[in-house]
Length: 170
Image (cartoon, rainbow, N blue to C red; front, top):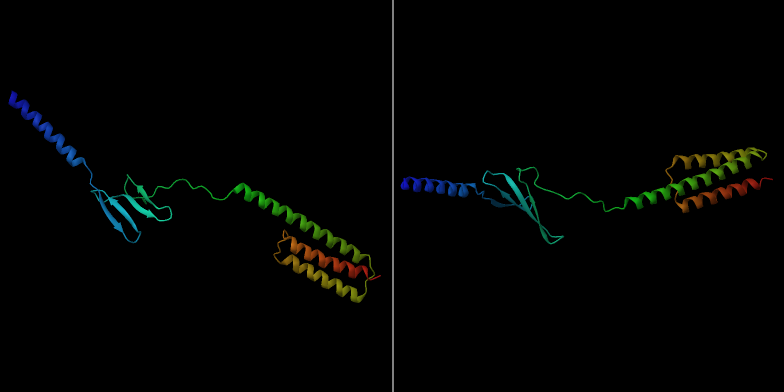
């Protein structure tokens, strides 16, 4: 009986040792020149991790994949380097400038149009007015940034010259 117990314990001991020895997974490391990284494979040939040197941060970047290969990289959630609130406020300010400047120019056009309508029309004046309306049509067809103060000042200066010319018709 004692010999049988010894043999049973020996068999259990051998089974436990073999389970521990065979249960250990061995990994193979290889260098991938194309991706310039080290790759780790399990005994079944599955990619389980990568290691790549980040020269910018001077550190190794290690990614693991316990479920087989699916790209192998685990990234942190993306954090935007742009302050979206500040961008939104800047765009809102630019839109307000655009709207105000367009209103200024439209008011000036309306004023000059009323001034022209109050004057007696001659053939020369009609030709001049036609050239002015052609220039205004060109402005409407081009993609001008009316939030730009220098462009608006130049345009209003041009309209002031037109206004002086029309006022001089008396």
